[in-house]
Amino acid sequence: MSKTNYEPDEFDEAAQNGPRGVHRAPEPWWRWMVPFLVVLLLVPIVAWGSMYLLTNNGADLPSRLKPSTAESTVSATTEAAPTAEAPKADEPAKPVEATQEATEEKPAADKANADIVVLNGASVNGLAASVVAKLKDAGFKEGTAANANGWASKTSVVYYPSDEYKALAEEAAKTLGIEEVKSFPEAPNKKGITVLLRKDYRQ
View 1 (cartoon, one colour):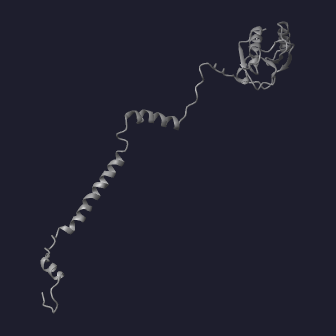
View 2 (cartoon, rainbow, N blue to C red):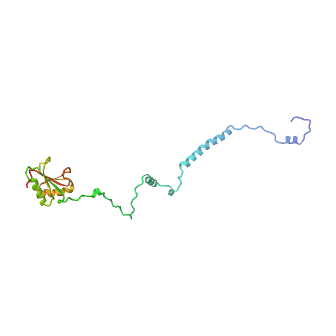
View 3 (cartoon, rainbow, N blue to C red):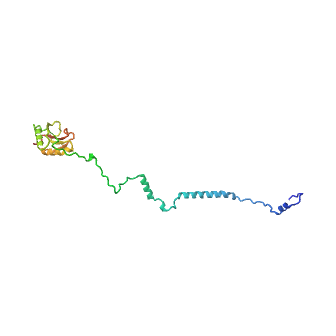
């Protein structure tokens, strides 16, 4: 200590008896890297732990709380494509109503009311009139006799325009001994039968 003109006092004694300063040792070079090392290690660990928790969420749930694959499939199918509701057991099944057009059948024509047209294509005078009389005697309505012009058939035929006259045509053919009976919707006589006589007809 430097000498002064003042007498020593209690502060000078404390300074002389107290601890003297020492030279600090230099700090190790790795100490400043510790915080960086801690951050580098903790960040990956925290990130990995978060991902593990997110990807395995619900892994520890009891099996009774987890929907089964079958239930999920059934639910998805039901929602996507709902099926028609089945009728209840106590409800009677509704009968299928048939349309009037499908079930309605016209009754067979009455021979006493159906029109009869007899066409003479055999070149025999009075043949058509005699056949008209024969059919009338068998219970048919009195018919009309005319000549056959423009008819293609070369043999005797009984024509009917629709199914309701089919049985009537067959009965007339049997009465006259004619073998051929044909459906002919374009026949002029729409309300009865047409008898075409050719040379093969025998009285």
